[in-house]
Length: 153
Image 1 (cartoon, rainbow, N blue to C red):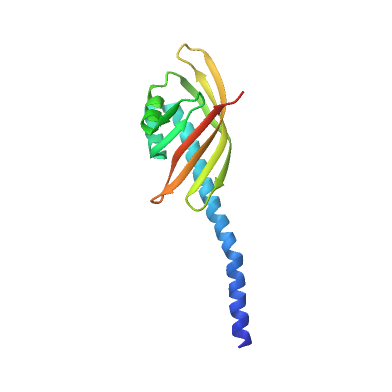
Image 2 (image 1 turned 90 degrees about the vertical axis):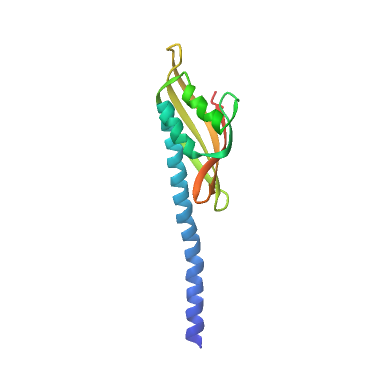
């Protein structure tokens, strides 16, 4: 009886130790996936129409965002803005990103980004801004449901 009780206690103890490890691995996988999706979004900025196609898959149908100039846009307006943007980008990069998980299907990614290129008049620019994106996993797919950005001073 003592050996059965000892075995059950040992298995229970191992299970309790393994659960946080499994959660940490799952969280690490989600963090890597969301960071990769954010990097795809940044890279898409360089490609206008094709880039808007990439971003279309990243945004939920009910997405709303506030850009660094305070303009509020839904998904369709965000994609159209990407396609019709008069700036020409030569560089876009996420400088930093921190992922915060809230349960198994909601996360925020907060970061900073830099864009370089030329405006419609040919004047060169280099812009930095901070942003926070809210992601939700629905039907096995992570999508951005909200975004907020602010130009860095």
